[in-house]
Length: 194
Image 1: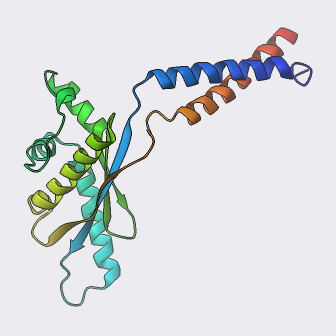
Image 2: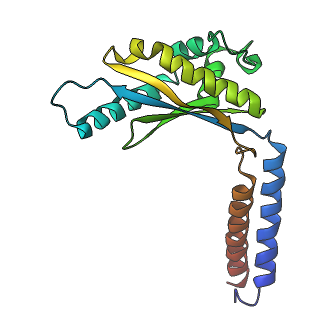
Image 3: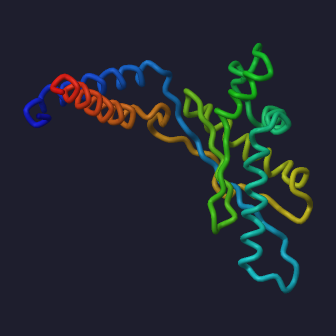
């Protein structure tokens, strides 16, 4: 039954894929910039390297959560060597500003290494680099305030932006649209026949 109607099913998939593609292109495209910060635990004598790396990972997990905070936002925008476009954070209520900040800058731990990856998203690749660089520098400058004095943070890779926009992912959205369209049309064909 489905084999006889494969053209209609494929056409439905292509139609939904096209709608997904158009919707994705209509959303403003954003670039991502990444910077890496090394977490250095000042180990005491007799502590094995595995424990030192695990300690750095745990500290990194704490820093990942702190990157989302209002306090960290204020420290990033106060970085003197960066001129940041703050227009999307101004003249909005606190809740909206926090959501936008959490969507604009985030961090993740590269497990097994003690490296913290700081990512920033913006419509401009240069602005994404500035935000990622300012966030990484703020972590280095204020890291001891967040995690204590037994830890040093160092930028090991300065911010660099992607060559193509990463959000929204147009190809993945179109592929998901195609799959959903095929499934929807398959269900419709089965219901009509049954």
